[in-house]
Image 1 (spheres, rainbow, N blue to C red):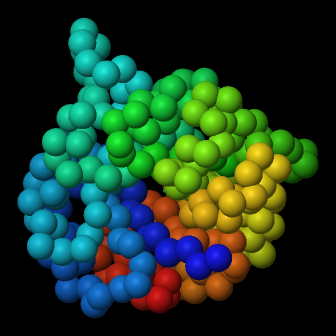
Image 2 (cartoon, helix red, strand yellow; image 1 turned 120 degrees about the vertical axis):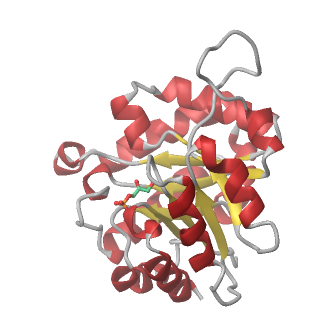
Length: 249
Ligand code: 13P
């Protein structure tokens, strides 16, 4: 099964009106790629970025969304608002949301449902902490995080989703999982999904995230079950991000 690679930049809470213009201008110099290139700015900049990329093949993502459709939810942003600004993907369950903002598996699952209901595509982030890895719980944690979503939206919906495996110990630490470590978990995730649906497990794109740089992405992308990357820090540098995209082919 050939799965298109996705290289997505999660800008997290970084950038300004000015810096975003130069970052996007840098990205617009990218040569055509067979991979899908995605950027995820903070909410206030979605409209600006949507305009700046309108003549390019770069795709827009948001970093979070409310599970509610509309109403008295001060400070929240709905899926339809994201749709108004050309958003295709929504990151959900990022480890920073889970650990810093108390997002549980159940809340993440309800957000996945809201995003699917609105016709947008969830990019579901899963992954274990260092303590969990060291106590042999990596797959158990990933499976629990996935099962909570399967319980709410069903396995077939995973055809409409992207998974990002982001080991917490590799995020922002400069300590990427090796290509072999990533492959091991990615293939296990696929095997877990295959227990519910072989065809869904073959179709779903599984990205790796955690200290991805151009110097490490090439080996990662050669792994049969690594279908791209979710890049944090390195996505704020246009040259580095383009170099990562190049290694994806
Ligand atoms: P870093 O690439 O900065 O480690 O961040 C990864 C990440 O959290 C992407 O969502």
